[in-house]
Image (cartoon, rainbow, N blue to C red; front, side):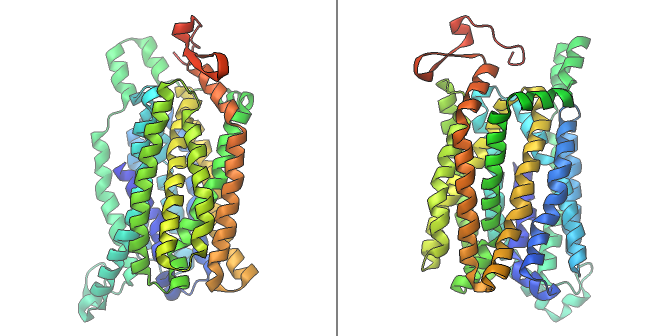
Length: 454
């Protein structure tokens, strides 16, 4: 979770530094959105599929450790970027490193916890997103102010390593160096496959514990259950588009609409992200597990529907508010519901697939979700602002169009396919159907538990 916090800080810090980077490098809204979105997601989404495949059979803490080092190193090197092309290439490196974290960690958690207790610990891990986003704005604002003070001193040009840097470059260098140090935390994490193998002490178990499902098996499973899987995957990709488009441009929105400087807007918005995001992830996970213990197989997706439904009206309201205080109040409720949806989607995927498929399945999910969300979200807002309205001060209308419209589409897709997801998970976990859709366990009903569930 600490590393997930770091990944979001490194990912989102560009949103805090939009205006100073644009000013120093002479970039347009579209160019800075490409740096913050497309350049990052190009490798983050595509490589995530291959890393997810590796996570089904290799040492997952080692995969994560290598990823943390790569994204931290390239973040630090962003501090020396002096051209658009430099940032573009280095942000691809950040995406490459971060692609290792989610598939490997969600696969690990599915080995640590049983299905009916999985949503809460997964939500604890997913707390890294709101904490990381919040800290990227709060700490990013403080770091930027501190960097301004340091680099404003006449003797700053003589400092080793940082001499002559712009404040935003110093912020990126600092975050990268912190990440390199934190990568040592991976030495404290054990690979449960190895511990289970040692406990078993049998060659047969050694093989089965590390054997991943083949690509053809995963493909066949997805085709056979395309409505349950596709409804969740594609629906969440639209919600991801809404989330990333608004998250990337909200600080700029506060600056252009209410004349807030980036540091003030970043710290205020960061507190909202932190508090509302934490509550959304925790509440979603706890209630999903409570529903699961009552044998509602689709408990996690039920909370995804609930959270995304809450976010829709408030994502439409906040850009149109007459004051920054009211805007932050409205966006806090949207963030609460949004984070609930993302946290519960992670636990939903863990229950949707057999454990031998989880790494690859989550890699594919994040490929689709992030390719649409990060790849298209920030740039779609920039293009509407720049080419449709042709006025940077009308960014509030672009946020309304993209954020609310995409959420409505995603919500309807997930809601429309809920019954297919519910039925599939019930079959995987050996739950039988009774009157009014309530379920009894397979043990109680005398049904045979499916082999992949056992």
